[in-house]
Image (cartoon, rainbow, N blue to C red; front, side, top):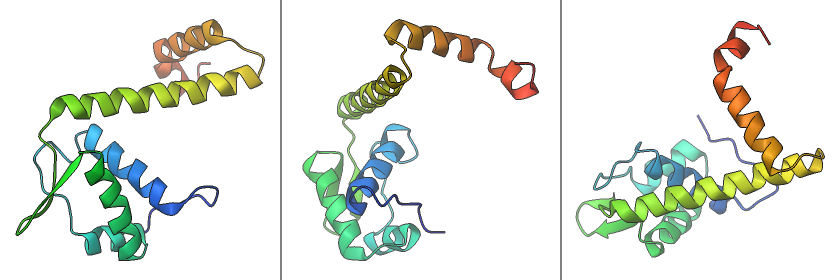
Length: 129
């Protein structure tokens, strides 16, 4: 099944983001081999050249390494992966806060909202709220 891509941003950037998420979430653990360019391209529903461009970006960032006979593997540098996770979390938080500002809320309101939702997640799931 092809990945769902948005039309507002370049596809290869969306691929880079998705693969970063797979790395920082542990779906592709440190030192593990990732699927081949062709397999990933088929999974994403994109041209292999587009996938190769995305993988090249990840390699330049140090998240992937190419081994001559073994394909591409995820870095074993857990500190780098941790920094990437932190960077993604900060970026997502900034997006969240910007959206809240558009609703007339500030960062304090956002923190309170997150605490309320996280504390009552089961209430949302059961329809109590």
